[in-house]
Image 1 (tube, rainbow, N blue to C red):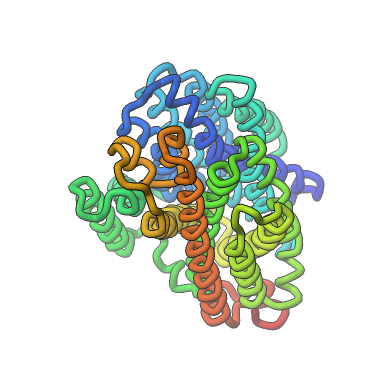
Image 2: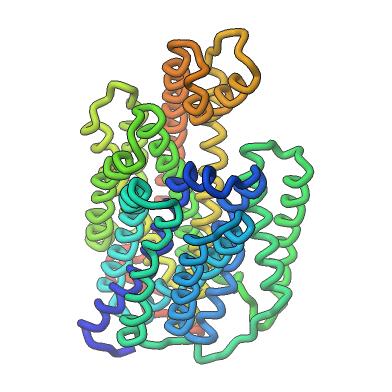
Length: 513
């Protein structure tokens, strides 16, 4: 695809703004929860679906939307998805009942599932030079990570001045930018060999992925023996097994299973899932540390996270150079090692730790995360034909969603288990006070006025012990993934030749990575 240099980078800017929508929306809901609960008064079940509908819709539809983009055109799908995202944001902001809020959040997730694979596939088709593509993916990754840090800042400021729904109106001006600039700047691209979407495959992928994500999330809170968790596990695993078996038989599969036979593809998809496993758990843990342990406001907590996110810009920009200097496998292993080092640093944090020490850990984490995700994403895009870029991007993003859900569930469970084991509560507390305090630090803070003096400090110490265990566990995982990357990605070249439908990727330059 031959377009001018200026238009290529302008197209990248549009793609970054589109993906920034998703990053912001993943963080602002958590800030809005207290005011939302006070205003709409949802039941416990309704609140669960308000929290999870967005993520479930994304996980279930990514693969389908990736294939749809290859079929109808990535630009067209991106513009349609952005328009729906803007509409759903307004519906979410002004939802008068919990039921309508659940519907609006589901619609937001459906729209987000169109944006993720569309932006990456447009980058894959616009940037044909490998070095430029790596730099473009690095900037794309950095902007997304900065969005995770910026969401609490903008959201916290809005919540201090307006109602809970205002945090979702952040999306509207950005949607207008994507729609107007995208219509003018973005080139259209699609797979010239039109493929038919198999309805049964679409259904199986949705049931399988949503079932698995639901099982992971609910097992962490309820255990595996609850009836709804058992049903979700059976449907999820059964749906995915049937889905994969069907893909092997279809002449035009929704997911090309042969892609996983390419070591460059399968290894980097697995690495992306694993690193998100640890990183999202880190974000969740330190959001609680700033607000519940230190007692900072949502806005101050958001501002505290933001400088650490600047490390993502450094990592994203340096990722391409890292590949040229060290090769792909060693560069990814280096990024993962930095993540592990950051976890070790942050494991030392307690109530008296100065902010600058926490900031160092976050900066190291940002550099390592952006380096790893940039190289992994670039490798996935480079190993598939441009015609199938949306579908391949969707697979990578689905792995990210699953890794993040698993990280929050398992490491969150570890944090909670250590907290409960270390917590010492005085005897004689009424059940309505003891139960929430024993469940989590957030519960203890909520009933702090009814707790004896010093009990809340004990709860905070128990949380810090759990946080320490979580950080050490994440560091060990980071080291294991780094070693795995060195082994599984060995021999993947620094520069990967343009791939056609008829041939696999082969090296064209540089030493093996």
